[in-house]
Length: 365
Image (cartoon, rainbow, N blue to C red; front, side, top):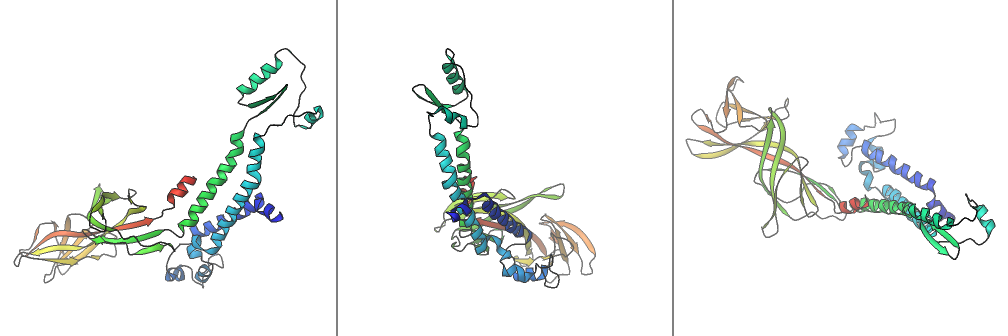
């Protein structure tokens, strides 16, 4: 009984909640699921944060994956145990007792109540009191000349519903550690792919076997600034039948069988150009410029011309081998009398998430 009182006590629940709060704060402060080299670089032993947080400390206590450590699961277990114990030993009895009616026989027993009053016997007084109580939404019981009334059942059942909601949310969070997936894919336009590059995989999660194709990718500009970028995706079954097609953009993902495809990034891979003399088509890779995040440079083999592309636009700059600017050209224009730039080869960055427990967590809310 002493152990049960410990788990049902408010102090114990507050202590567990405080510990979960501290653990969650550490999980927000310290980057999660990074490589060991990342922690060695940002949390060196020579300069510990707050005098003790180093990469060794982080790895030792699992602070690089706080929400999947055994001790965090233990905190969740004790909180659920506290909620269940309190619900069955305190909330359910209070709710059950609130519905029971009790007719007091001894007049002295009324004096022990927090409030009592004695009224003179007046004609129709009882009927008036009953009418007033009914207007105040009291549930009334009558036994001979005695009347018993109560109200506030919703206030008694509300804590039970709150505890049940918290238990569902905690259960969903616990199961999410075993059934979850987060993957990152960088893919060129027209590519067929299977999910492979997982950066987070639950212990009981298998990689989905669906096939996805990047049908198209484009960028939308407003006032020479990127406004939005889009990818058109198709999902196929194992027989090559298209199950779903949708254009996604930032904050507008594709949902399919508990999988969410998010638009996360984009890049340019190179150009496709034609040699007019030989009627052959070639490809040349892009190399990013260090001083600009979305600018690239490339060369056409056997020529002395450099091409610089800024953003995903149909224009590019021509420079000679000495770095002198020549002219601004468009996709489809001839370069000299030998080459024509046909197309830019873009790639799209997709973040793929899988978590079947989301519906359980939402139901808890």
